[in-house]
Length: 499
Ligand SMILES: Cc1cc2nc3c(=O)[nH]c(=O)nc-3n(C[C@H](O)[C@H](O)[C@H](O)COP(=O)(O)OP(=O)(O)OC[C@H]3O[C@@H](n4cnc5c(N)ncnc54)[C@H](O)[C@@H]3O)c2cc1C
Image 1 (cartoon, rainbow, N blue to C red):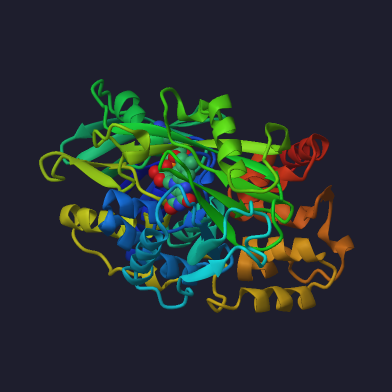
Image 2: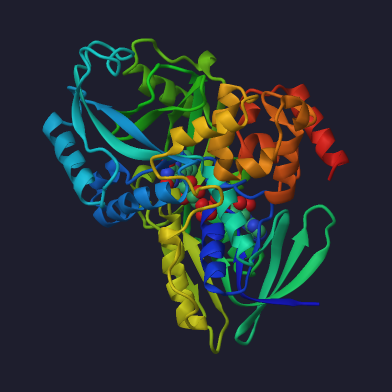
């Protein structure tokens, strides 16, 4: 039997799930298919910042910066467990932009984006004090400003969970393989990755939210052979042993006009990124290149007293930005804003809306703009609601995360400190659904190592679409950084046996 939905979404990255959540919450019927795992595309490989993007000011992208800045406190309030305010240290480099220009840029940054709770910019003395300590002595002055850090993959999962709770049908490991118009509706087919089974669907509107695969979907699923709208720009990150003791992030200017971040990551590591390099091929195959590795090590070593060498690298990752091809000559200059391209008016011809570009930071606002387009086709249902709603587990006071960890540590005193923090940050108030009435470690079931127990695995399999060990250790958590291959293989076997 063919199932009909108002809206059929291709792609379970941040943009697809964000639209599914908003639309389902307003009362539209929604089906979303993701060919792999949720957040298995670009949305797991970002710099994990909810930010306006200081450097886009230089490209005169004021509207994009303002839109993104305004989202910071909205998203922080929606999910104070996976989104945390962060202070950024921008050292003044005597051979690069003058200090007055940095200050002016940050003045704008502080004032154009509706900042209420995040602290304002201030000047910091790097010649003394903790922020200057890991840097070379030539850096004497800098600026400290605010943005936020996010667990990007969990942001995707939480949006999908909320979409499902509001009635959306979310199908993972399900590829959309064909789509054809029949008058004002679409007939689509999806294929289950495991069984190969084909399922038929129909829909009034189709959203192509396939990120860097957006042109490929237009080609293989919709049968176009002329799709060339997306500019794929790869960006890589390296993870090294922790480079500094404090919890601020560094933003370093480079001689090529780009910037890199050195971001506190896990308790023992620092994340350094990113790069901008045009990419061709399947986005799934993108890997950090030797040139990118050298670039990141050199750029960090320009600032840190102790140089960063290749053999310090513990892990690296690479993602592909699905930027709209605006004809910019250099990858670093291509716009980071999103663009919608609609085909079909929805009356005579069924509507398809393609999404190009976008940022994690603007996904919620993007979804609202998308619903406005959908309303033009399907009529209005409900009102905008996501600006004031929590994501699952996020009903914690916006500045109350530390108090929440303390409360949960008292309720579950058997949790070690790092485990308690990790689990509070992952699940928020849903932690009580994960741990239930457990009062000792013995009640958590099978021990997979590194603080991962059967109760959490079962929760992830039942509520968060986890099917394989990779789904758990690389997307729903980053336990893959501390678990060894044997532990991961044991987890995978256990999950297969208990599927
Ligand atoms: C290096 C780097 C750093 C970044 N840093 C930041 C940052 O700090 N802050 C920020 O705000 N933004 C950042 N971004 C941008 C942000 O990560 C992306 O814009 C965003 O993740 C794109 O999400 P998406 O949903 O469009 O695409 P994706 O996350 O790639 O999702 C698309 C999904 O579609 C699925 N799909 C494809 N074809 C099909 C099909 N036929 N059927 C079913 N499913 C299909 C794919 O499997 C994939 O999961 C960064 C990007 C990169 C690359």
